[in-house]
Image (cartoon, rainbow over the protein chains, first blue to last red):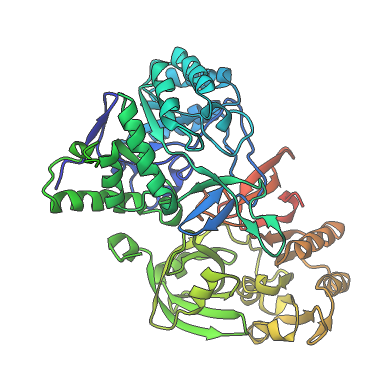
Length: 303
Length: 262
């Protein structure tokens, strides 16, 4: 049995596997399958200042080795989250990363300020949602905007702050350096890639929003590349994600530079995916006589 | 997906597989615990073998608690349902079940009209079994070749009315014509419906006109199937009449027709 624990920004995680924001809601649906304490942490559904209804359906389309989604940040708002969901999550004996988003830097800062008064462990600032017109990709695709929103949130909270980056950019390392420069304690990547599918019969995009976020095993090599590039460009920890579906995928992303790994689409397919990935990571470490998961981080030997 | 202790929890044995029409298949799955809990109107979510990311939600067509089995009837619509149709008795299938919110049933003595359109017909069968002779089942299909489950419905003691779009079997035309006739003959206590959106919309409109409670089973492209990922959004009204998105997999698939924003 390997030691799976990792430490990010001073927060101890019992293992490096974290359900990614959006696929796991606030955990309640998964509790009837297993205790949430088995997870390294939980990145909660993206929460905005006010309630958001989200986009029209269809919001999902299957693709080869992946899927598209266009939920559009449907959520009940930060006050509901803090009053109705957070107390339960904090009693689950796992690290809670509250994922937040907003249409403006001020909204993000306001949400972060409210969370600052709670016992949430970490704030994950989403500057990369591809499915909303404002506040999503707009922040994540320019260094200036990414820096501005990070600065505003940094002023609003002393909680460990992780900024979730968009892959839909020319240079993700420049964005990563910009948010690091404004006081981000960690970065997480990659959010979904912008994609599209068309129904040949109707000539309509399958998603009612026309475009959506592309995820799943198909994007894994992009995630490995970007995690590697960002880990080499910044000094703060990197939380990797993007198509992870097995313990070996998690090990690979950690070698690329990730200190922990989020799992998204694999959970949409199978609620037990995070537990399987934890077990497989442990088995892989044991088989390779590696004593701790943490020692994998950044150990790729590039040519 | 390779088999491990987690997939074992979701793996069930197929007891029988029967082809009903060119496209429709009937699958019976051994799952005593699931069958013990399943309610009419709920669904199962099957992961086909092969390179598929998403499960395929399929409504429950039969619940046999004594035998510990569920029956589903589905149509081959794409690669995923094609893969499911290639399974045979003795094969296993990866299934999350039972899922969703089913029909809210009144006393068995209530008079119910059950409306099924095409591959929306199967979830009406457990209801026909429940209401028996107090039910009228009106099912509509494109043509005689695609009509399914007529003998099963007749076997429940319910009155059955078959409609086809081309008149090749039963009555020519839409299910809403016999529905209105039946309502005028004897007003039912409840209408339940599953099928294409235009059919459900027309059924809900008739139910409203005649002030009859109506429950509809909706379909939407689905993700996790358990209410977490929020992709299968359905526009509904909340208690105050405000528009909201609820989710077919958790709040539904069965909704009170009055809640749905048509």
